[in-house]
Length: 464
Ligand SMILES: Cc1ncc(COP(=O)(O)O)c(C=O)c1O
Image 1 (cartoon, rainbow, N blue to C red):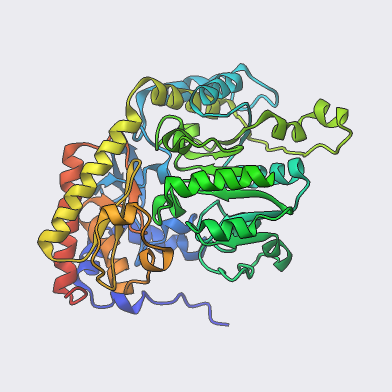
Image 2: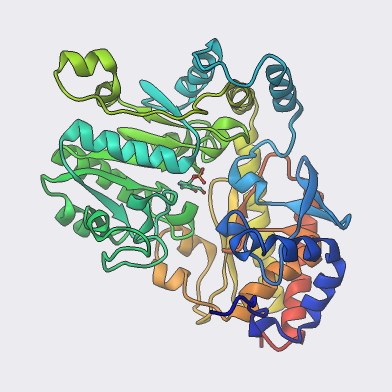
């Protein structure tokens, strides 16, 4: 078996854009080469995969970050969506610094976790009980287990393409396996416990809901945070159907939580789920997450209640659950969500950016469409050139096959590189969350970077 590392994708060979990027990020390139001997693809999170290499960041502040070569970027990934207040908000920095000096782990409870839970209960509808975890993945996993225990049923319904982290019950049916088969590395038996339904199809959901379905879990604004939007009406129908079937409705609000509105998608849509998985913003940028919801469901993991009911308790541990510094960051972050208009600022920024991008796309004569609601933006690269606009996409008129149709690798790879070259880091889908720290100047730079990248793609023959 050869151990030679494969060359860069053919789509990037001979590209002047890529060569300019490589010259500008020579320090990052060196680190990436070293990293490839340590990590698969040289990365520690699949969403950080960039060809020929990503940037290595030294520091960040507000809406900007800097790489090892001294390049400055408008930052959109924003801690993969965790940083609604931007990088290093002084309140969060101070809270964490003060707490770290008092100890990082007590191996016992602290009043901080009560304060953090208070913040959640104040903001999140239906958060009668809470359990802290360390990631969004852990939260959806725990929510599903709790649902199974509370209902005594074994299967769950998931929506094709919706993302709930990377654990076994969430893996198949996210990037493929829409036929119900198991994702590579996942046991067939686990995949069989997960029933996949097409998003937006009420009849399909109704048909799937039999007496063995413990829960329906979904991203309430659509898959991968609204890239393929679902309508509020569909979500309301799921609420009715699940209630009628004795099935729990779980909202995965890992990214929509504290972003769509201070109370998340539940507040924005006026629908209360039985359980909510929270992550990202909830912990202010540190590694923390939570499950919140109905007290009677959480009774399944309560020592006394389980004993009184003579049932086995659902066990749950986690060395870093509610670690003091994480609590401190979460409290500071959620107090800011509550006391400022950070959510609305991010929503307004995102909305303005979408409008500005669509104007550039029209001026430049590309069929791309920017869209998105609730504090972020997506770009539909529209490979078939269908005649549409942001409102039709946001209204849920298109399915995954249309909105996530494959685009030529040269376009998707070079778009990311072109944006970086012009000082803007977006996510690869393409799109990104935005924060309350983004400014008019950031918007102008982002629009400029898209325009320059379109010119470069044209020059290299990737766009007509
Ligand atoms: C909707 C959703 N659910 C779950 C997760 C997984 O969260 P984590 O990366 O903290 O495990 C994410 C992460 O992006 C997410 O966006």
